[in-house]
Image 1 (spheres, helix red, strand yellow):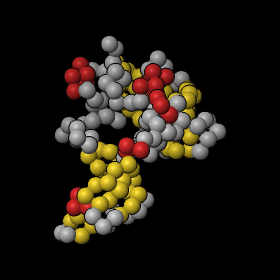
Image 2: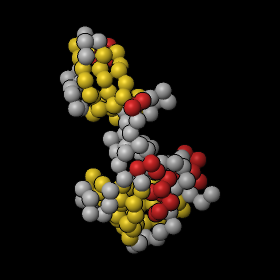
Image 3: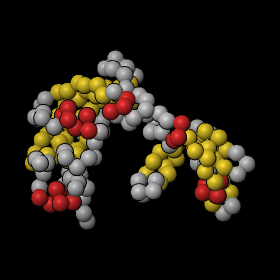
Image 4: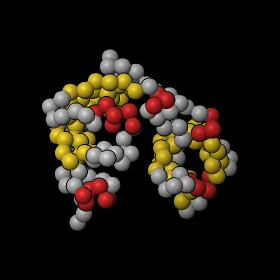
Length: 165
């Protein structure tokens, strides 16, 4: 397995290149990631891993291969006590807000608040982009081999990566 550290600028659109813009790294820090460690959507990584610095890209990813389809099982009622501080609902708990929850593996999961009932809060833990076809465009800025330390830690070190103090 060849691990690469890839730095790129990207634009993400709904459906196709002419679709609504979802997010962009333009004017911000470029995205830096290490291939082969599962940090990115597999189809995204597969489309950029063979590119070189200076190459541009434009490709679509179907919803099922991006964040999956929306499922009714991802709409759940949780005990209001989970959202209380000093006996009061936290102010972030409001209809339509997206709040971070933790799954059983300790990963952060965005949850959209759908309803606040007498004893429960109904949330939708479908990824906000579930059911959405995506289209990425952008340019690769740098490609380099990952260092042994980066590979053993499973993340990038130095500029654009994880840093130790």
